[in-house]
Image 1: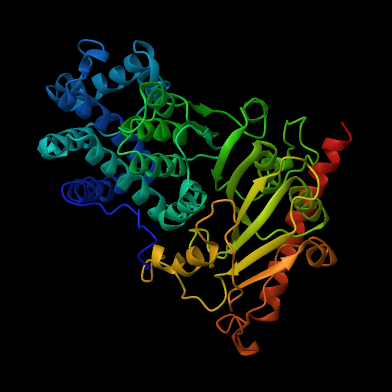
Image 2: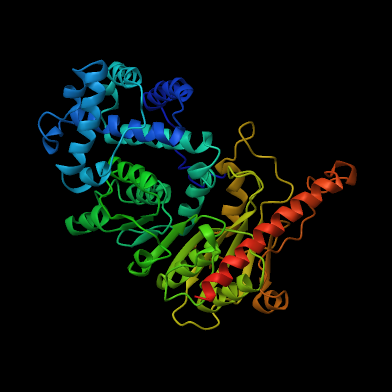
Length: 480
């Protein structure tokens, strides 16, 4: 990796790595009883919070009688019954972020012996070595990443690889005093990375004034998450990283998103696909109210930027007339200066073809995009997966080509993977931004390697039926 590209990817050092390994080993035991990875991480969230409060001497914020030692002193069924009572109590008799974390908290455990096993193992871990906030935060991030990489669906389906997060943060260069938003925040990976980046620039905020420090910890970040269980994990992650900014439980494609303040920087990897049941977003400020979630989130992002604000957004390959219209609107209102065509296989939903759009909101809403630079990191790349992990080094050539200017204004050079297209050229292509020019040797398979025709036909018919169902749902909505 070139020296001028810092590798901010987290490396879990001892004791964090050791703790993550011990806790994740227990998950493999509990999975035999039907406990899923996300449920297990949620359970660890509760126990880690209680243990952390004891180790850090901050138990005064918890109700007397409902603390770690009270749970650890009990056993068997009595302990299990008390645990459920404790979760309910912390959700109703606490304040602030603690109350948010434990609101409607419940256990997925059904066997008291499994709770006893977890409590015992938590008691055996050397937490003294992990008392520093950064170590505890690394432990939790390690667990979240394990959850995402091991899950085959749900949160892990579109988990953003950490090297890509760090690359997007590095190139957009978050600054102290900026409002930074992720409208589909998940467990707040982008916000945590932006916070870490700013703290590195400011000597852990030491170079800021008291007022600036307050803004940075209390106001700088805004996250929105739709799924309550994921929101709970996000809150815990925020607390461990000293982020006290609002993490909202709500729908960005509804009222919660429409009421957000305009941001200086938006970093996000929104969900792909269509709204469940073909429903339409409840946003009166969208020019295109469609069931396609990525088109709706893209509208939210470029309309949610302040003049001069910048964004980096993960977007799948877009097709169709509505997508072309939304992209044309984006290029009118913003300077879409760079597109990174991502390799396939770096997301945990296999076959996802995605890009990162880098753009800046214009001072006016007319003719802001003149030239779009596209970097093709998709063609002729390794088959990424567990055996060949995607790393920051794979992004080094792109980062060098992008340049140091976070608005995409660095003078650039055409290369084999990096080309520019004028707005007129893109318009002549029907505003289709899925532009590739490299022959992908790996994708050029022989006909003999293709599935049998009947299998291809079944696959096509399945997709057509799904499309027809979406159209019928849309027709029903329009006829109301």
